[in-house]
Image (cartoon, rainbow, N blue to C red; front, side, top):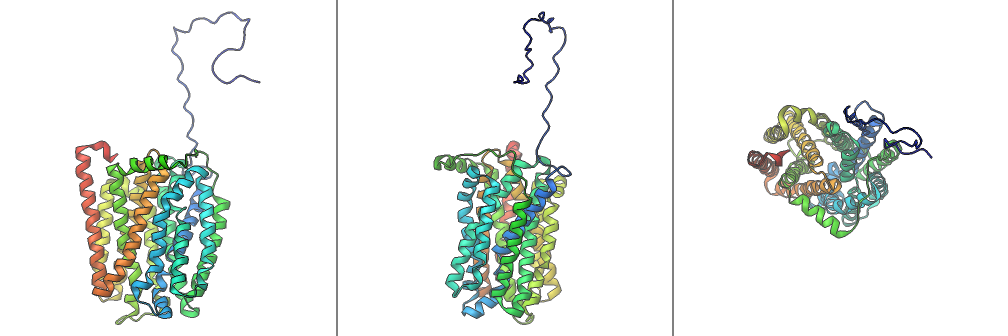
Length: 432
């Protein structure tokens, strides 16, 4: 068997080599970085696979959001009660994302993402047959719990398998898949529900998710840099404690939750606003309004360039300002201005989310799945709170109430970012 390449000689009868002190030793060659990079083998397949996973996740997770007025009518429930078909899914995701991330540390990112999609798709095919609002909410909660295995595992997979310089762009593409899934789910369900009802609409979304899940599993490259971790509760608790003791991570978690509170509140309630006078739009047209998600696809996928030009905090200020402008514009009772407002809200949200989530992956050097899981947990707590509180605010104060809730959340984002700037001046290492 050949000897290992250690530099030692295997010849025993040769004369001793001349001393090498007079000539400097050649530097050891640097091992090439085998992680994925744009233009390299596997990067395009990986990007498309995770893009499809993002499509399936958001299409399933928010499949009932555009249909809430129809669900309210069928089950004779209020907007705030119907909103639990969204809040239950996002709340369960927030609750289960940390345990799921621990499983991904032990069994692998790709394995857990595949299992999560399979279960979520199976439940999605049962949702159209829910006989009552209670059963529908319960099924949606199970679906959200299953989907919890995707977000944190996906960002951890990217942090391990993609070169650091390409990480923000790669995560931005995954987030862009989220926006396409959210858009297509709402547009498709809107038009189908107008003709055949909400049950057929969510069934079609389930079939779309089946196709995405199959393609995802076939395309995603096997991980090459994953190292299995421990499932011991003490190890998990210590990792979580370490992440929560990091001030930068805490700020990023809060920013993700607040941005999502705005987004969840606005898109849960907008259907109710547009079905009422003076607009009285049909369900298909309301569903088509979600085409503005395409703006989020662009803003998320260009987040890397935004950070390169403005820095992380500058990008967050811009995202917050854009969201604020959109909220204020949406107050007008003029449909084109409302649409423009939704465009700005969507662009600001997705840019802020992509910057914050990629910053979490960049900041955490160990336990990346748990770091990402904590972000996702905060993010979906914000979604659940936004959906419920946004509906309550709409019920009590109309659209102005929902906008006021959103403005308070954006103010929180700006305040946290300002605190981060002060902390960076006091201790620059914390901002790196």
